[in-house]
Image 1 (cartoon, rainbow, N blue to C red):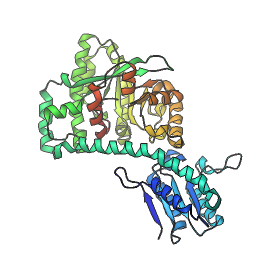
Image 2 (image 1 turned 90 degrees about the vertical axis):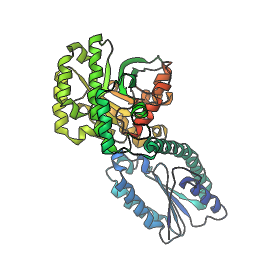
Image 3 (image 1 turned 120 degrees about the horizontal axis):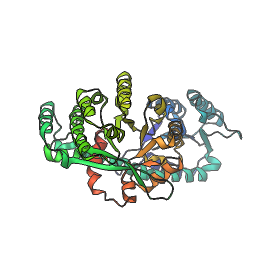
Image 4 (image 1 turned 30 degrees about the vertical axis):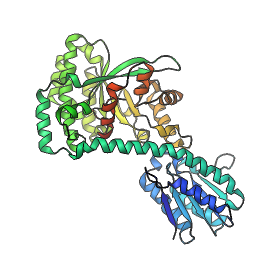
Length: 431
């Protein structure tokens, strides 16, 4: 029976890529009758790379290798590679065309002007084994960084959610909310710049995002208990944090807010009496200096509520930003139709992968539709992220990479950034 090799995230267990290389090395002693097929699933448009699409492609290709002692590999990029003995090219083409049919609306499945098939590559290992072994070796080398990134993300998420093994419960949440209602949170307030960075010029701060450090809050208020262990309880907590943030920002009004700031708020908060009171106490020029960041999950959870809140805050002079977009969700975010001023897109290191055309194309399409000056690329942890964004025309950046370019230290935001990663991007250190 055919096997499917899918690589693990961490550890010493062989990955799909390393197993593929090992099999090809064994075939060097005799690859008669063997073919290899690579389906470039990672190059499909983002909306064609959902789980059910990948499962359909896998099942169809599996039918080709089943019963022939073949091997099917799911690579880190989600590309599929099948090594098949005792078959012929016609049978392979028939199977590929079946998979191609499921993605027939995707431009990748159409042959280019020169007749080249960019969706599938076929290798006759009788003659092309050295060539394909070189391809597989390169894939194996590239995957190492990917698996290492996933390993670090899993370790970080595990540590952050662990809370010394004590997830928060509703009773404890109520106690935390009572403490937050009267506690002085000034020492937990942080800020991080959102900068304009054009070519090699030094970044220039345009906004400063204000946020409450969840990591420090947890350390001071609930040591040994994870505030992030329950997504829904944490979402409830953000409503309390919203109210306190409004109070903290309201104090800036008396000191004449000379800079532009952004703050994270739920849609529900924008429709609340607390926000109405906050708004009445602000001077009109202060409203113009505030950009309100709304999470994308709130926008799509209740479009009517979002639209009402959007129209209200914009009529009062605030600017609006949709936060939490990723390269995968970018195709579904239309800034103009949402009626907002800015969109934030989270940096993904996989965008640097030359084979991951789908993510880059989706991000570029969204960026062009939104307007390059209206897109913020955030969590830019390195100069590579900034340089990549600049190649797409993006000029607004946020993250530790920008902080370092400004000569700022990283220590003040690192823990809060990590904490917010596990918390779905809410109340994060913006980098």
